[in-house]
Length: 457
Image 1 (cartoon, rainbow, N blue to C red):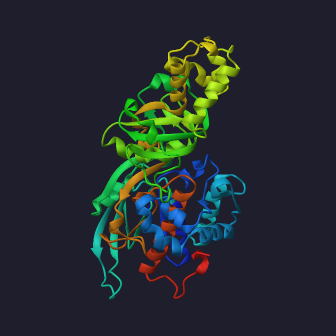
Image 2 (image 1 turned 90 degrees about the vertical axis):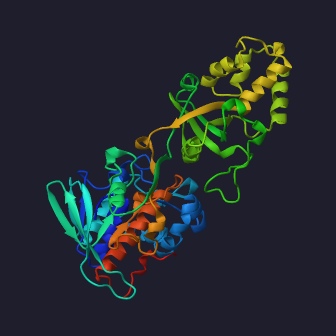
Image 3 (image 1 turned 180 degrees about the vertical axis):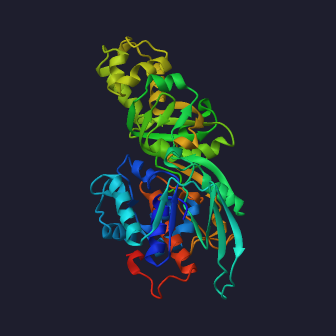
């Protein structure tokens, strides 16, 4: 077993539970380093969403998880964790957290799972290479022959009948996820889909403008990504409802890449916050084909006609107020001066002196504050790595390699990534559980009857 994160720990625990002798190798000094920082150290374990909603959260690759989720899903996971001392709760958006709001309790529960199965643990051990040694015995009609592997760990090598690769992705390398698993999989014959940052902030070309609003949190705004430069955006194409990955029945049209309403932030380099993170992978992929820009609708509850009427009413009713004061009723305080700069209007100009054309410019800025996207931040800054080992080369029933029998793959090393909300961790737990189960089965150590604890309830 290589890797002691969410997928690795549950895989080791499940294999040991079924009677396998498990050696878990982790390069970091402790297990679960990425779990400990997930969900802002609270650890969003999973989500209460229905199965179909879950599958949509992973985009087209979600189909791979349909069978695995029917074998071991949310209820099985929560029952397993409760059995080892972790109580959970659900919150807004169906997000599930430990009752304690402390990710260390999640790691502790998984460690108790390992201890119950007498898993041998070795931390501070870096695997530097994995080599297939070939088959040692013939398999049956429906069961391929087990392979033997050699694992290199510095000056020492180890041999194993089966290997579970649970090394994580390439994001947050300080937690040990440095992309080793991709290299190991490629050396064993696997194809790796290009790695990209997912759930990551975006850097913009207009850095000075973003920096002038640094730290500003915008709620209930609509962020829309477009193909093309900011000056080419056709605001009339801005969707009135969310569209993009994980949103059933709503496909982007025209130049629109994705559109979401929610909360976002302005930073010293660009944009961040929840809706930005959710859209970041689509933006990163689109950037490979040309320029991408974003439009922020600061008043999505009002269509242009309604907003035009409001501006006319406010400017007539409070005609002696300055433009600066009038804007204070429409946008956060830290946005007023940057907007005045974009408008090219003096802040002390009285409302009764604002012309119809100037009101229209104000409306356009409120409905479409624009930035050209320069790039996503690097994978190291991403919450999740997109890309990974090709799913076509992994048996979803067993999480076993179709290329190197006896090799099992799980977690973020696979080409699976999802929106925030507990979906990524559930995929890690599910694929890890099945990898551990079938690695043990391959060794002939699984009992005749399967434990029902992981069935969908």
